[in-house]
Length: 371
Ligand code: DP6
Image (cartoon, rainbow, N blue to C red; front, top):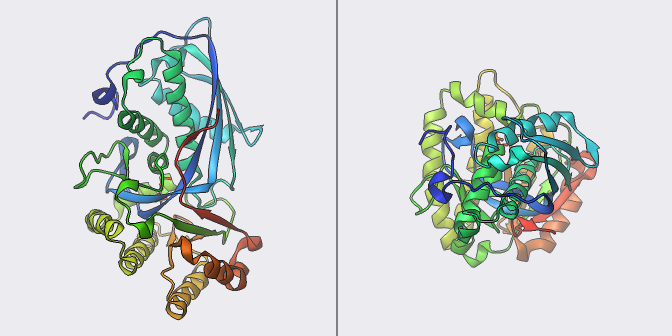
């Protein structure tokens, strides 16, 4: 498909242009943690390999969207104000402007309204926790809701639940690739692979395949450094273009996706640990092998990894770690081990965290309408 054409035309048909005068909605969307990593992309966040993630709960963004019809619609430029944590934020505004202008190709109504967008995060942005994932999926969910509300006779109303989710997910992807996985409860798969309905354009739900062992997973996010990332994800993806190991990586990620799908169904926790840690280490190895190369881990990241592996041996608890493109460590473990892991974190790991900070997170329900 030509990526410049309407991305979801095949799913929903053309958008009808009847409108209301004004409205409001509020959506919440969580961050997610990738198990098989998305690292390397083509235009408009089409991924070079499939990825799988757990959806988080406590690390989330809440977005309010208000709209008011203008006297005359603008040409190609969506008019809006943007507040982040209660303040105007010009850097984020520029990114959202680009996103909204792109989305106006899919939802031409956007050009006829003044928008007021206000977002709040429960966690520090750009700290290695996927803030763009929660922010962009919350905004996409609000925009899809607005689209539904302003149409009187609409194709959007005739979408079934899956199609509606695919549309929200595809719109999230246009904002940030990993955002497309945040909308589903518990777990999501993004990228074309052996699973029916899988697509490079949107993510699909995985909750229904999860073995009971994976129905209640926790994620302790250890904040080794809460500062801005050294390399943005976008710059990181770009570095894959010249990376000599890129094609081997994409093949391995496709293979790991299929293996992880089997593991999630069979409930084999040891295999889960092996695969998830391999993916985390590979992501960082790819960054180190880029030109220029980057080291995104901190010494404390390595201390934590070492401690976690020793704790796993000593306790027999199937805890494993994963990393995003930064120094923070995500510890993944089954919910029934919470007490022992909590003790381990507070007694042995907080000394490696920035200001002893961590986020006690777990699998969550995906996007939610708040009002
Ligand atoms: C390491 O989704 O943040 O977290 O599509 O450019 O917005 P853009 O990148 P982004 O990349 C996420 C990379 C990752 C792995 C993952 O979440 O799969």
